[in-house]
Image (cartoon, rainbow, N blue to C red; front, side, top):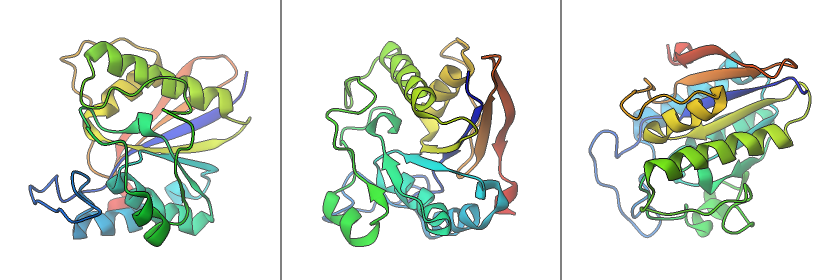
Length: 209
């Protein structure tokens, strides 16, 4: 069994989080970070909490890419985009490739269709069971591809966060259970050779102070 850890990050504050519409040729239905969110992402990147990150995975939506980017720049790492990490009920498959190439060259678009985790994406038509299975696919993918001692950072979204963490911890909480997750917070799960995942901390925001 491998020893590794995953730091799950909810994207920083977006224009959508503060109720502002933002649509242009690149951002229609894909709101970017707010000015405050851009500051949060920068603080995350500058924090020691990301110093040991080896691999960065992100949702393919722009607010997640922007959250991961300062960390990627600091560490000179690529951001591997996984559509599976997108928010619930999202109806688009990801950020316009032209925007990524122009402004976020460290982001590596998904080239395995529909997704490298091996499952399908039901954009805007997921059931609760579909979300649960998507979370399990993600965790299995990270576990299978992790190296011994690796630190993985995963940037995802608020409503989907609970499904992903349940899968990471191997627990089946009811749908009514709400996992508290603030913008740009971090939740870390450690995997040891005993095969039992351990929650190190949850909803940590110390890097934003």
